[in-house]
Image (cartoon, rainbow, N blue to C red; front, side):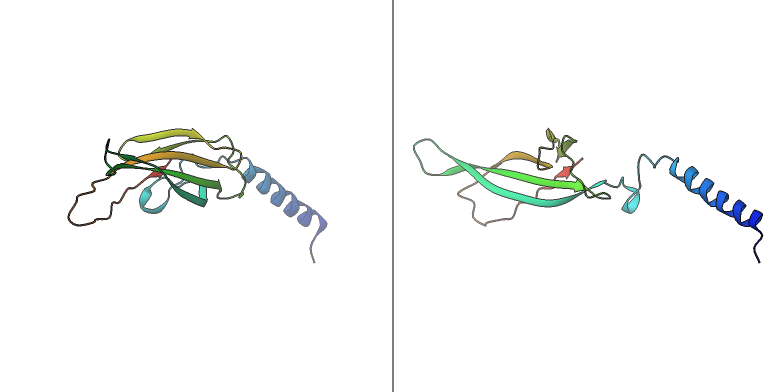
Length: 131
């Protein structure tokens, strides 16, 4: 049988362990896949809208397309809003710095040059990172 003194010490040991564990700070830079810094947010929605098209003067030949992108996010662990959190959208260079709105979203516009007389259509790949 358990002695009351032993069981009381075991309870205090468990309580002390939980309290001390709660006092530990999280790692500032959590490591993700391949040693990269892991994000603490996840994308919940992406919206993509084509904006105005720029034509050559006096001709109906498109030279530039505008695209408006909206990305909504939430905290990966608590699944709460990121309203007011600062983000950067990066590609080859920083495209925009923004703060998440009331919906926990950031919106930016990109202008993509368009070659109307190209012989073969091609896909364009653009990588964007939200930091």
